[in-house]
Image (cartoon, rainbow, N blue to C red; front, side, top):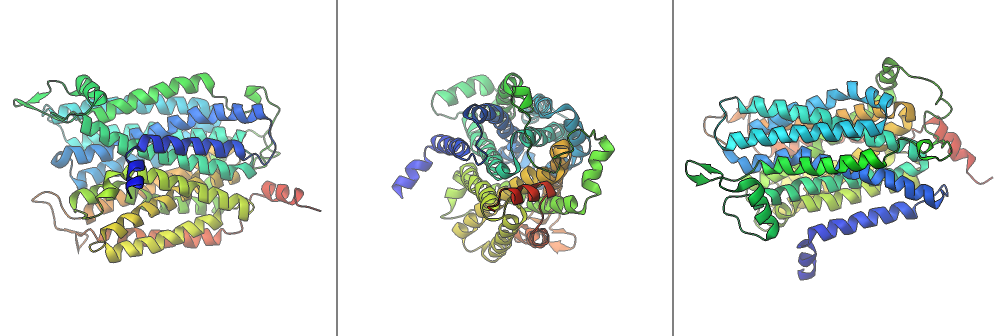
Length: 509
């Protein structure tokens, strides 16, 4: 136990080790026999792109960290509304941004995502400063919702851009591995958001001690900040710092990223997805949207994405808040290492989905998706049964749900949508699937924010005719997990025709 605790006491080293393992797995997995230079150049392409995406997560979930730090200035209902508005904007942005990124390319899309999100986070930091200082006379829910929606609009460029670039560089039989990498990048971003974000909050608290880093942050963000003669916490730093980091990676993206192997002076590369043999066809915006909305298959993939969004952010955001409001004796470990645990288990989920898909199901994505959805059904039922009586089991269930949901996201948004949409329509198809994931997030955010107990006096004790109670939190997620399982089972045997032909061509005679 002491050894295990000593490892957890050095989370940055542990996450760095995991990142090295992810990179090592990438270089070891080369089923198509690419040249060493191709593998290196592809790494130079996806690594800065991926790190930008990870830090975009830090600039997305810092709202959750700030809610805890702001206390009564932002109630659960306020947070639920703000997050729901932002995720709804994120979801519907893909109707514009998906086709746009398919036209302009993933590199430009990621540059727009990084610069736009950084600027939006700076504005959120300014808003938080004036809120804490008591110098604003505006509706804070409206103000935060507007700026968070702006942030999420630009954030929506990120996922489609990284997947757009991936579609040109990774063959269908390699995309399970990229799905694992994609899930790992999401997980590392969650670690940055929750653990780094919480450390920023702790280091910028009034009168906090700490080493040189805490002293530096205090000097930059929290020195002599007084309200009514008292020092206040510099919570605004949790928005400013991710902005600076994102802009650093944006510069590397501008320098290093190429949209396709051909742009990096490699021969044309056929990835055998749905665009195989059709790369010469120009698709209009309407054609791109039809790829999703006229396809029953794509709509079902998007529906799985929606269900995963309900329980992914239903756990990521709300356990952090639940454990702060309802003490968890003996399970403080989960809250203390929340971001790290989500990171490690998310990496496991991403690799499980990708590995099972490529090794046992000929690159079919639905079978592991069904397995992961079934796991979530079991875990959420356990959460309802033991919410008040088994804190350690509850925490374990929560991190395993996130593990499963990251695996589902990497399979659906990061891989299946690309396979069936093809390189020409990757951003549109993956974007709308990812948008449905965040539409699910918006649904859970609003309802869970209002179904859980009120935080302040004068707020209603009921919602939609039922008594507000924390048991509604896991109970709300159960039907969505069941729906995801049923849809994944329906899609069990689906493969793009080009992939099916490729699989047949490599079978032994």
